[in-house]
Length: 443
Picture (cartoon, rainbow, N blue to C red):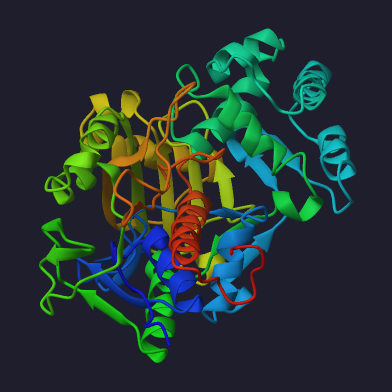
């Protein structure tokens, strides 16, 4: 009997654990290494004054089929995701767009007809853009910035400001003047233009570490695989047909290694693999965008009309009522995606501005108990037109990449990370003549 292939996964985020679970289901022996004591990578929990906070507020869409499948595989209950029909609500602008409980495309069409705070010109412009994309099967050739697409389809200023720009920045984490219209079109195709459930907002009731990485680590451990936290890998080297890891206390010889770190960490790990030099050069040229999340704890509840509301005209983009999602009363997360003018003021001034924006949207606020501003300076790659993204396979046949930056029609999201991890895992299984349990066509 052929021994099971030994595979190392370097990185304990969503991509790394998706790869590890896929490999384990296919019969490989998996060891996952994470340098931090906290699992989750760039989607993880942090602690503040006894609170467990996400380093950034994430939402999932109903279209995130592979993420939901992975959650089911490792035993996560559906109730950990608060399911809401798409609702873009701006209390400060008296504007709301809610998807109707009807089959596609009526869910969006009826929702648009009933939308408040959007005039006839705005509604006609939205319909015009969606018809434009559908007529071209959501292909933008040549790719161009989202701002150009909006201008080409005569989108109104109000619609662009309250709907298209916030959706683009939230999904692509790139300003509309620089964001890829093709990637944005792919997001719209598989959310607003797909089945009614695909546009649902899935907001986690638990922190991002507990949502998937921690249950996945338990699932792997129960099946005899190894998850090693607080053990950074310094380098990957080749010894004949095997790969070894500088930092692996067992000095195991691995048949394959999945590098599931952020792209800017790949180069330091593979310096000893000269075949990867052109790949590393390409990764080093990737530009990145930040995400700032302001966590604000108030001494009492706030009057949120929905768990998620939009903020327009200021610095904040989206605000989340964590109390409505199983969190402590009075805890609010305000998200600012991508680079922007908020970077030109002090953190103290930004906090004051966000409080004023919340008050304008919600009315008088309870007293603020504490605040925490968390910035991921390189949260995602800049999703620009025509960007070439690397494949999961590399020029070294034993070395694979997994992460939200690898080739995909989608931007850097949790779903992209999970899909990439699955693709890397399945690529290894196919190379070893194996297949994932319950999945056909891999041999």
